[in-house]
Length: 454
Image (cartoon, rainbow, N blue to C red):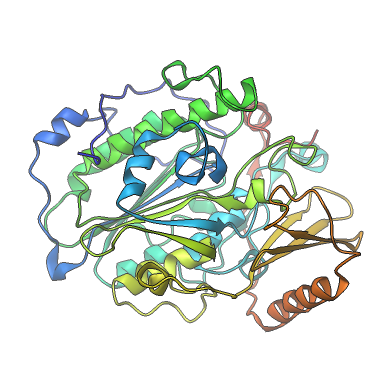
């Protein structure tokens, strides 16, 4: 059916390690074929009726390159099929355009201004001189989704392929097993899951599995089996689209390997999008426009949730409380996100403002951008320049016409909403890792994926 991908996947050549330190555990390199998975009996319902949960984060995946979100080419056939039977949030937004803060927000349901995970692996001139990094980590006082699920009987597993998602930075907290790679590619992610499969599929208590793929990230390889030379936007977009298709096939194979079915709760999203010259830049440096913040959010649990499309604004900080709400578990009081369960059952117009933030400490002085998304408006405030922008995304979805001067009253209202949020939201003490060495190999790899000052 829709849950099983069509072919076996080979293990990629291992890349040079450059991140916070890869897991010492070396799982099996065997990736099960979908044919093997199809022959297995579907998993029985878990003890207590709780579903198994799979959270898939695809790094650097902008929503508008998926057919589910209106793209003319079906770049992700498995996700398109999955979406047919799922709840699709048409306007889901990331709270940051950088992996570490955005993912910390997903796992803690707090905004970057609260958890203060702003730094990650990014080579600056100052770091080149020191030849070392000090990275932010998720504050120990802030509960994560894995910890909360573990408290309620879940066995927890994580596999992450981004150097900024590692145990040193607190992302492994709450996981029974956490495997972190430094961008080895989707086959290695699937191989890691396969190496843990005996534990994951152990009968008894339910499992939570978090997987973080990185393949759509810069540099954009050309995956021939998914390449469309007629892709809109030119060769760069064609390569990017092919990376999406490549990752999509691995997601399908992974869920097939797990025999995921109607009783499995699957959440698919991204940490942030990517810019291809939309506002004069490439990659995902320090902007907060929609090509960077608008991400896919697909929630599938066919046994419980009916398929529907939700049109109002939601944030990825809402993911954790939504998962917990579906399980009838009270979310942590620290979280700022809201459960999306009512949106899945009855369409409503939500006027809750959403927020986003990007702090670029590699710049001197530090550049801080904040954004408010409310109804069809987007307000962006940049410091220290004090630049203020306002866009009507209903009439100007590409955010080209700054309406700040013409609509000062609306801009002022959104500015006050932002200040009120920041004054009222709890802020957790900023936490750092010990110094990590910047070797030449590490620097070369970081530059290859755009994590370096130009």
